[in-house]
Image (tube, rainbow, N blue to C red; front, top):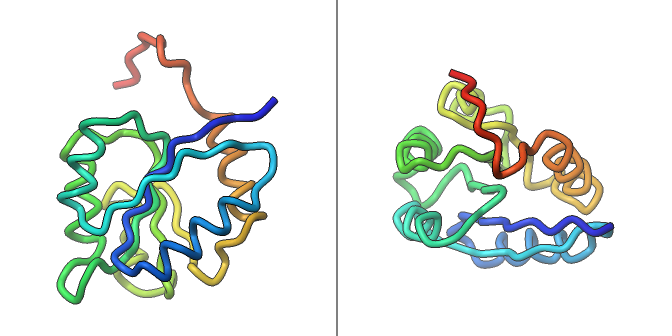
Length: 138
């Protein structure tokens, strides 16, 4: 059985986005609908229009915006599903804060390959609640 996932990649570098997209195309056992935004504003607009299962967020969107600004904005806009932070350096001080900012996992752009994608999608499939779950976990 093939699992279908809607993925939003928020990445301001077209080359990096193309690498992400090509790696997803090599993953077996899953079907993807991949969307791309270059800014948080565009991403928030997209999240208001589409059901997205997973967001992959670049750590730096331009010289002034990193996950300290972008990740909380996605959560404040009401997105509650997993957000993964993609960074060239997952050991830097800013990325170390990703969990307190609302991130779910971090992944080095160097580590992004079909195997790592397969792993986190399998985890996403295992932990996803049905859409008609009415339980309150607060």
